[in-house]
Length: 131
Image (tube, rainbow, N blue to C red; front, top):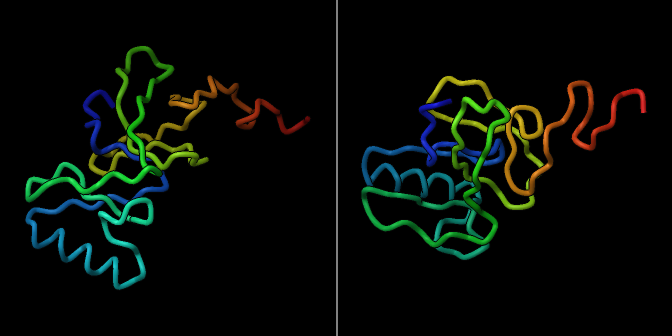
């Protein structure tokens, strides 16, 4: 986790695609749009964003997407940044390029809106199965 790139961490609700050329990016966008996804630069209706592109400008960032600071409860791990959908209840942190554990919000890490550390054997509201 120490080498996690802040631009490759995502919540489990976001798909990420990499490309080696602008033509690849255009092909991905065309294929996704053929399945009904809305392309980039369509405001909040956009289903996709082109970010940090070497082949052109980044697309307009819709309001449903945010970059958050992720802090780990293991103090040996430095904080990282992650892309996530606002108001998402997905609590897994994924890194598509590294074979790492998938830390879970509340158990191994936390990000805004903070929920704090959840004791083992309880749900995200702090309730055990016996409650």
